[in-house]
Length: 78
Image (tube, rainbow, N blue to C red; front, side, top):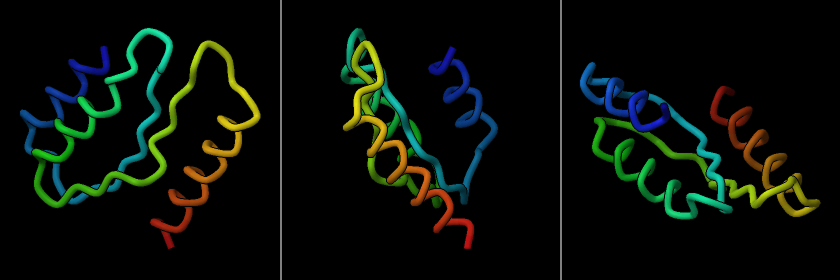
């Protein structure tokens, strides 16, 4: 589903947006790089840091990364 979404967004020439990425590190640890690659091919796109990886369950470290991503999203809107 995510691949279809990204392909559709690219086909519709989505541009000038800021995105945050969350990947599943348990079964698709390369998905963040693949998503970044697709988004990077779109004009004027910004990928926020950190790219968050969730492995099986949400750990304390993951919660901190999610909080940092939320802060980055909020800052990009200001």
